[in-house]
Length: 357
Image (cartoon, rainbow, N blue to C red; front, side, top):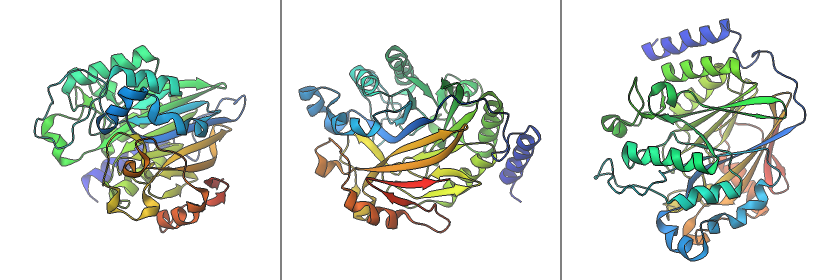
């Protein structure tokens, strides 16, 4: 057995000994009512959409999406780029470098975001200065954040919120893409950065946070852009469940991918784009995959009992940087496109795909 897998097995044994397996879990508090946790993929209110933002306001790209998240108890997404005026990139040779204005944080607050993940391959596009500016902007807007920190402990600490009498924890990790290792992208020891996705950090973070919360959501920035699920995604998604995650959410591919149910826990491999201000390269994939998902996870008894996936158009070349709900007639093609061996049985339910426990 490879050493990394031995480490994962050891950490899993610790979790099991502590009663943190997804099937058993710590004692759960009484939940006052069902909760709706909404989750979306990649967000960038900047770059190609900037002229429209300056003309119409920073809420412009989100207008058509607001009805989809009405009634949410919690709304979480992946913020793909720092909120900063800093103009010196960490890596001048990086092909795609993003940053957004302070007004974007206010627009996301007004839209209803409660939390944003920062463990991704753009969080440090403008170095520590840009990352610190992002923390300040989100704090000022009242949006919690997770997945990056001033040191490794902070990056792995996650965020915890309470709704209807239960505590919900969020952890975020970025896959160790080789190009980012030399840049000091990943938090290590006293060094700042994003939480790295490997067996050791995943195990430490989940084993620490699991006993403190009733529901644990794990967010991964992983996989390959405009491509199918990779073996690494499947391995880490399943490991997260085995270490105690109640819901696994993925992003980075910019298109939707399939859903797997592992030990009764949903793994959404890619939510695709939510509102992303670049034109993208959607021509690389079949039409049915050129979407994002708004995920509505219904929590009862502190568990996900139903997961709805509402598709939105993700091709900015055709949507004028204002994504909107997909035509329900496209659902059968989307379901077929994301189907994979061992995938979740997804029903057609009006304007969405649905899994029910």
